[in-house]
Image (tube, rainbow, N blue to C red; front, side, top):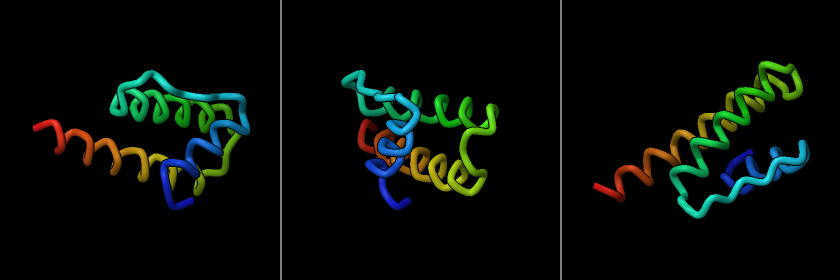
Amino acid sequence: MKTIYDVQQLLKKFGTIIYIGDRLADLELMEEELKQLRESSLIDPKDFQMAVLLVRHEAQKQKDKRT
């Protein structure tokens, strides 16, 4: 898993498609969905860690753009 697209594809496997129109809000919702999948033991811990790392990194880039 190397990109946000990969994270989206992972979520899609579980029937979750996230698109609000606000990139930062999309990323925050993706992180929440990942947490729920992890709490339910539906995804591997390493996949969870990598996905959350990617989402948080992209969210930080979006926040930096806004300021």
